[in-house]
Image 1 (cartoon, rainbow over the protein chains, first blue to last red):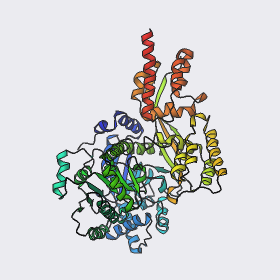
Image 2: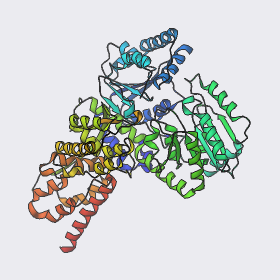
Image 3: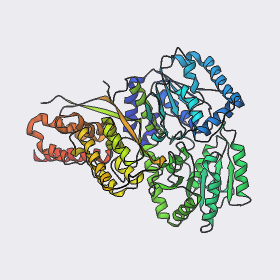
Image 4: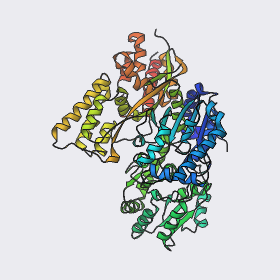
Length: 412
Length: 221
């Protein structure tokens, strides 16, 4: 698929595209480098996959590199992820060593690329130590944190902060996530790509085909949660909500997910979910590969409503995806879900499985409200959470960083 | 005859200041010392940042009073503050403080929020860029305004009130350069209330005002 900016015009309007071109005029030819930990699986890889071709089209010289490590490296970064979200995880010294060694090897492999870039975007903790390993760096380094670090486990944050504080700026998805750091902390929510396989329009036949493919019943309402098999997504709570609601409305539940490439805990959680589902034929647990974007797209379109009952959440791009398909979302009252699920307008915020069950029943009994909320949900995403808005803020940030920290920067 | 009107665009960034409030008193204290860009952001930032089109309250302080503190009375009083009534950010700041202090005086307990519902003070950073479009005759706006981005509308119609003499938007400030020739048009623009409209609605209203005015001029000549 082409990623030409013009393809976005019918979705977001010509003005939005024109503004991107205007903002990027002063950035043409600059070397931009993004570094994260995986090329597939997880929201960061998905964003970069779509973001980079657009930055290239706007005239920037963009590269995407990955920090790679052995098993202990991934165990360490998974532990970082969990403990930054608040779990008191003690990380073995051997895992820390694997983390630092992986970064040292990456710095050695990429040395000149890192040091010559005009802007280096380091995504999440995995490649955070790279800055300190590049003494000859000439560009601006930005740490982009995609994780909910509103209440981190302090020992982990104390360890990571020593890498992060030397950056020129950091980006967090929500104000709640910002930390005490000696540089500007920009607040930029992430986004989805309306043209990606996961979000593009699909033929009705393709949507209907998921019923046959996964043994679903077309006649009964379908509720869906799409997420990695991760305890913070509370899949067990979703099953409980389904069971409570099913006492009152005919219902089937799909839990669709998969393990991202850097998520070794996924298998254990998946087993817990299977145990909780017992042999209920109306609970469909789909362990999908990371590239099952089109299937997820079809499932989201087939669903009557979507759940994201997280108890911790960074931003929750699956919420954005569901809303883009015109579905109201019943979401946990945490993190970025609050920014998207406007209570009683684009869905409902809930704190318990009981609350989720109540809202499931309400929406399935009030189809007019369900459809109205779905329309509002799609409008909100169009205005605020598409890739083009995200790109505009990155371009603005790069312009701003080259002109200091003044409140007002006038160009031209 | 004034200099040509230079059409500009702008984009807004939000920067965390590190200041937070969990109680109403902390909110008051932080408002008192916040950078003016903070006050600006929490009144106007809603227009350019990801947000819901039908917000319950038009500024962040009112919204937090309602959803963070669950104080409906305070939320209503803060929500009615119109930033255009204040000559500058300092008088706007003082107006907010007055409302908050009045509420503090009324109660025996200081309202507080849950830890995960704190008010986060953000400040704005605005990047303004030239669009290389110049308007010489006011009638040209009838075609130019419908093509303006939300950022341009914000810059010329909202942000201008911080920059121009007499706190006017850029359109009126420029039209005054023609003397009294466009006084009717100036009055019509002045009647538009930007506080409860989004930028797309404002663009539509401005387009209508300019088109109605100049179609009337043409029909009269």
